[in-house]
Structures are given as structure tokens and as C-alpha cells.
Image: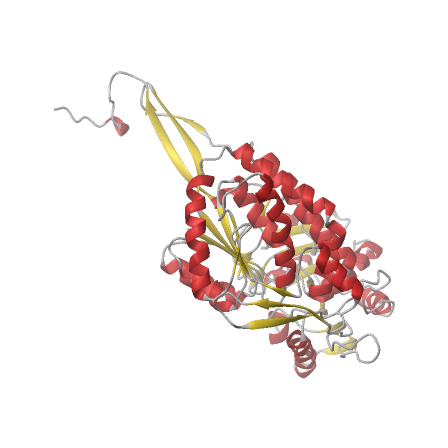
Length: 513
């Protein structure tokens, strides 16, 4: 490991060998002996070791969380917001270091790593304001001298299962909102990116200490899939938020639903951009390239399909292939590079299989699709982004490939384009590029995109804090971050108050004794 990397990890209090269980400031020694070596997809170097948590370790954490939940729900929401505000300050002070670690451990560009930490900062700001706006409604009662209102209460423990592609932002989206709502959190990060989780938790430690908070409000449990299974089946956890593959989400939903718990699912995307003959092609090109290759195509909002009007299909195809020829692929910490590595060799194999599949089904690879080797590519995780022509019904097109492959599909009419856009199992993000207001409005109408996110003249990739993030169909239906997504982390209670001297019954019922 390079000296600079060791110094980076030290600055974030990440050790060469790390524990995996923390209830705030207390790191619990695991009963497990299984240790994982964390390697960077950037250069294959070992970043550190983590001792996995066992199921008995999990139980220790949950007991602490239960006790903390009883206290935390009684703390006024603005005070809870103050804790989140202080954490946001810590993130600002360590933005560069944490952004660099995200880049090293996950492989996204340094600029994207910084952007992810900025998302954490932004959600902290949002949550602080939210802590004074957990509003309920007041309603008129049908009974005289009565009033009705609704209020929102904490639900207790929130389980958070996050994915490798956004190793810190998604946790923050959930945990910071849950915190101001009065919940305590148990975080099971991706086993592919445990060090960033440890770094985030280390930054929390000083906030917890400075405010003399009890153990159990913020909990970290790093382990394999068994920890996730424990979270899903645990009746003590009323809500589980899970981000990852559709396959994983279905399992979580099934297990949580069987105990009548609540789940918030953010799963796969198969996102399309419609490029109209009325589009600004220069802007469409920029959005398409970033949407397709940003984070090496490992965003749930990455652009997977480009639906291009037949009159401009050849023109735009040529522009896109030429743009791909200008991409610089290499170390993501070098800001001159546009594309970094995939997360691991399994991801590389999935990408190569997708390239072969589209060719076998009758598509044509226009550029890319190879594994890169040689100096700078020693990790074996670098690939050349692929553009292929295809049909929407191809099996491989119907599935999400978590890598930089995009399928070009021509269309004749807007109605056809919308049908193609919607004709997949996923329903996360979508976009249209057009300067025709009728096309734009139809795309946004009930007869348009069936996705949770629908954009006009911006791409599919990238979510802004403030808007509710999530999708429909096999994307899971969950909503995180902005708008009224906070309601998922609370329980609603309707209250009726009789301030009169009589007791009239609802619906005019008479029950005289």
C-alpha cells in the first residue's frame, strides 16, 4: 500500500485491521474469527482488514439499540436535528479525505467521490430543517365540540442495508432522516465497501462523545448476507431499508412482509433516455455519455437504453461513438480520467457476458466491450465502455447489467418510444430530450413514463436532495431523501379530542343507557 493511502486511512481513523461492530463509541470485539481483506479495484492493493460480525454480535447491537430507542424518541426533534447538523460539519471538514476513500474502495472518480460526500452534507442540511417540520394535519370533526388531528411518532429501530455503488450517501439518506424522526439505526453496509462505513462511523464518534449521547443510537454491523437476513426477520425492527439488486430486494420484502414489517426498497434500474428529432443533440450527447459511463455504469440510475428517433439515429450514433473514443480510462483519482474500474472481477465477468449476449441475440457492438490490461490496469477491473445496437425485447436488454454498456434502439413515434421506455420490469429513472413542449408534457403525463423519476432535457443519472428518490415495479416502490419520504420512518397517529360536556357518537349513532 502506498504511504499516501496509509496516511489517508489514518486521517479517517481507519486501521490496518478493523472491528466490525460499533454501538456508537464502543467497538465490540467480535466472536467471529472470519477476516476479510479489502482490496481496491483501482490497483488491486490491500486497503485493510475487517473482522466480520457474527450473529451473536448482531444480538448485542440490537439490545443496545432497543434501549437507546426508548430514550431517543423522547428527545425533542430540533435537538435531534442539532446532532445531525454537527455531523454535517464533521463531513465538511473531512470531505476530501472521505471522498478519496470512496474513490479508492469503490472505484468511482474522485469528483464523484466528492459528490457523494456532498450528498451526505446536503441531506444533513435537509434533515436539520426537517427536524422542525414534522407536521401533522388538523381536521374538522363531524361531531360537535370535537377536533381531530394527526401526529407522527418515531417507529423505533430502522435497519439499513446499503450497496457498494453509493457506499456512504445512501446510508446518510436513511440514517439522517431517521435520526431527526426519533429513530435509532442499525447499518449493515456492503461487504465490498466496509472501510468507508467505518470512516463514516468514526466521524460520528466525536459527535456522540461531545453531546454525551448514549450507546445504541447509531449502530454499525459489518458482515455477510446473514446479517442482512437477521435484520429482515427481526420483529424488533419495524422498518428495513434495503438498497441493492432486485433479487436481494425480493428476499428482503418477502421476509419482512411475512412478519408484517415495513420495507423501503431501492432496487435495480433499466433506465432509458428518449432522444427526439426535436432535441438539442449537443446536450443530449453530454447527458448520454455521463449517464452511460459515470461510475463505470454502476449507478442504479445509469442510462442503459438510448431510444433515438429514426431520423437522427445514424447522426447521433456517430456522435456517441466518437465521444466514447475520447474517453480516458484509468485511475479514478487522476482527474484527467473519465472512467474508473468496476468494483470487482465478478462485475467484469457480468459485463463481458452482457456483451456476448447482445451479439448472440443479433445486436451489433459498435465500440468497446473489452477487458483492459497492461500498465495501470493491474487490478483486472477496467473495461472499455460498450455501445451496441439492439432490440428492446432482447433478453439481455430486459435485464440490468451493472456496468458501462448501453443499447441503441431506434423509434418512429413518441408513443412507440414511451412504450419501449416502459416495456421493462424496472421503473426507476427516465428522461426525454426534446424542445417540443407537447412531447415533453406527454412524457410527463399519466400516459408517459411509468418511472419514479422522469426528466426533461437532463439525463437519468443523478439525484438531487429535496426530491423523493425511488422507482416503481421491480425497483421496489420505495422513496428516500426528500419531499415527504420522512413519513416512512415514523408512525401516523390520528387523535380525536372532545372538548364538550356531552358524548355524541360518530355517524349520529344513538346509544342511550
